[in-house]
Structure formats: structure tokens, C-alpha cells
Length: 390
Image (cartoon, rainbow, N blue to C red):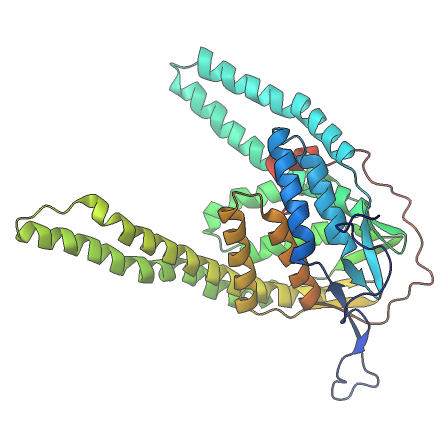
């Protein structure tokens, strides 16, 4: 008897997986074929799997998370289909566990040891401690970027479709160096270089991404001007929207203090805490909505710049849909103390499948297997820094 949680590897796929035809543009000789991904994951399937993973994580002091994360990926990949065929995930919990052990002993343990040594033997020297911990922060950011690139390489190499796997070439060190360089420029530019940074880092990742023996291409170089209009509106929103929301609450707070003093009654600070908390939540939601508005526009603009063997891409979600996804996933993760992340990840997969289109007729007859089998171990560094959402 098969496990009802196991994702199907064959069989019918849900509606929307078959190819459709986009409307013919004025003057176009032929219509452009449009194919969408599909996702048929269901809460009834993922609920028992999530509960079992949560229990095993608690029983094993979270050492089961490597196998649990693999199980979730197998489910999500297996419920995603394109042109009638489902994806498969071939990574293993053992690979991820071995990768984590190597990172723990070669990187994390020396960092912990050095931190303890400085904190204990240089406790009276504030200068030494500041230099060390600022340097440690810089190293941590660099390792995070390094981990995210290596994690992408591992996940692509463990993603199969019709027996063909993906891979990621290029240097993780070069990517981390570039990303860290952009990070250093951020405070000096007040964040105004972000569109250039986004195009640069996205290009580095996609121009080194492969599926089979064919390479993806990202044609965003020199097109940052298309992003600056939406980004400047978001940049101003980050400044003025929190002020517009928070200032009335601050006036209410100080007004209440003033009135209490005039009446001769002392206002207990704890009575104003709920008001300030509401104000903080509204500010956070305003910032999140501003980010979702820009991110949806950025994805819609940048998606057509991606190509693969004559195919192009389109992303059609609006900012309200993206905001609901992001807010809902944050709420799920927070309310479940992180144990409900598989539900959030399922929502993300469904969202991408609903809004990502592949334009053009895929030529699969001459697609060969990649010679690069990917890394032999899992994403230990990414697991340590929690780089990546899945």
C-alpha cells in the first residue's frame, strides 16, 4: 500500500498544464504558444507530513530536519508539472546531513571557538572586541551569499524533468564577492543602487544556470532604467509611508501624556503599549505592501529578459496577490513557530505555477543530459545560515 503523501511521478496533471495560445499581437504573423506550470498540492496531503516532521524534529532535537526538508521538497517538486510531466527531486537527507557536518567542523566550530576566545581573553579590550565582531559580521554576510549560490547549485542538480537534470556553473566565491561588494555600497548610495544590484546578481545566477546541455540567458544588462521608476516610488514609500502611519500614533501617545499631566493624573505607560504595538504593526504592513508593489513590478519587468533555447518567460501577478502571499506565509510561519513552513512553501509553489508562463514552442528533441552531476553533498552552509526559503 503506497504512502498517500508520496507525490505522483506519473498520471494526469491538473488543468492548466497543457499548452495554450497567447492572443496574436497586431502585425504578428503567428501566435506565440504559452505554457504554464501546474501545481496540485493539497492541504489534506501536506498536513500529516508536516505534523510527522514536526514531531520527529522535536524528538531528535531537530537533527531530523535534513530528512524532513528533503521529504517536503520531494512532495513539492512531485506536485509540480510542466507540459504534462512532473518534476522530481533526487536529493537525500544523508547528503544534506553530511554537508552540514563538514560545514560545522570546518567553519562553524572555529567561529564559535574564536568568539569564545576573544570574549574571554580580551574581555577588557573593547577595541579588539569591536574589530573582531565587526569582522565576524562581514564574514557572516559573505558566507551567507556563498551559501545561497551553492544551495542553488545543489537544488538545480537534484531537480529532474523528463529525466533531464539542471545544474549551476560559475564560481560561488565570485558571486559572494560581487554580492558583498554591492552590500558595502548600499549605505553610501542610500539604497538607490538597488536596481543595478538586482540586475547584476540575477544575471550572475541565471547566466550560469543550465537545464540539460542548454544554458539560460539573462538580458538585463543596461536596462536598469526600466526599474528605476517603480523603485523610486517604493523608495519614497519606505520613507514617507511609515511616517504617515506612525506620526499620528506618536501624537496620540504624547497627547495622552500631556492631558494626563494637565489633569493631575499620572498615565501608566503600559496603557499605551497596545496603541504603540498597533502602530508598529501598521507600519510593518505598510512597508511590506510597498515592497510587494515594487517586487511584483520588478518580476514582471525582468521575467521577459530571461530566455532558454528560444523560450521566454512572463510573470503576471499583481502586487495585491504578491502581498497576500507574503503576508499569509509570514503569518503561517509566525503562528506555528516555524513548524508550518511546508504550508507556506506549498502556497509559494502554487503561486509561481499560477503566474509564471513559458512563451514559445520548446524544442525537446535535441535536449541532452548535463554532464555536470552537481555537488556530492548537500547544502550544509545554506542550512547553517538558513539561506533560501525551501
